Length: 504
Image (cartoon, rainbow, N blue to C red; front, side, top):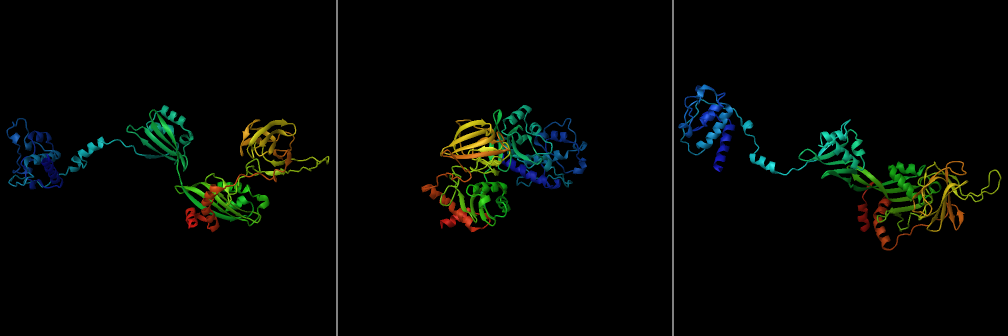
């Protein structure tokens, strides 16, 4: 068999190289029955010359009944090509025996049908490929204008209408597949039958979903890409409001808000901030595909005329501390709300009535704010009372764990019930304009030892500072960040490099 294959290969080479037939010695072409069936375009016998000999051991003894003569028709060129190959295999033409003297005297060349009749793909390769297991490939689809997922899924992803509806109902956010925009894209895989096997779509650079076929439904998994953390140092000076000054350094709005809230725990910007005060901010972000995401403040140094403050984020509890481990977060917040609102009336126990002239104490602090502004608990505690009064309107009283009590007047809607425990920062009510009030505002009181005090100046308890092994671990972590602040080198920085320097 190996010898026959080798001969066939050599014969193919001979025919594909357009070797003139006159140079080939042919002792056998093909059975005459095959020649007879292939006659269609062969030239006149005289064109082949008188030396052409057609031999076949079987055909020598075969009857020649109803077999057309060579000259009566034409031999198809493709059949001739095959005849030469088959004849070569059986004749021994490729053997070293050169005794054969049979030649095709007048032939000069023949057409090359190698490309049409013999491609370069091995039959064995085709058989092996057919036996290989199916491996789905990821493809990307770019959404076109006016395209909908429901139609696309039925036309190109092999899903039925009911399957599409069931898939959409299972999604945590259907808008990812229903509120498409031209240019958005998703990746998908199809099985051997052209049905959707899996689909991956990103909501943004970080977050997305993965749908995977699981029996008779699709399993849904959320995707959250992890970025490479990068640090950057910003520096600036106060000129006008602190928020605008911070924004001028290049900080994004989220970082400015975080920075402002952080410093407000120790710094009263209206009272303590001065033009020319300097500050440095170390910010870390996640880098994904060249985009910075989820910026977070790592460390801050504020060098002001009336305040010098340095704080560093502690990775173990995500809170900020001074380099000595002092707590920045109070156990009791100064204001019972987020953001900044105008102080419309201060605490004044000696306030006189504008008409009668009699003493009419104002035992709280009023903040002008729109009706419906969230009011939050300044510290942990228990709701002592939820009630209504003709002058105070709807109000709440909270007794805190440290013994302080707070009152909130003129509310539009309480969000807690009597006896309910609340935590620091939890929403307890919405501000309003109920009772005897000249306009929408929140009246806030702090009561210590059953006596009202100025909520804006009363000393507030602070959380316990770090100590022992916890303090040592924090200071080791803070060292490279403090070094980055002190360097003053704005722009991209590597905290790891400062870590190495501090270790040295």
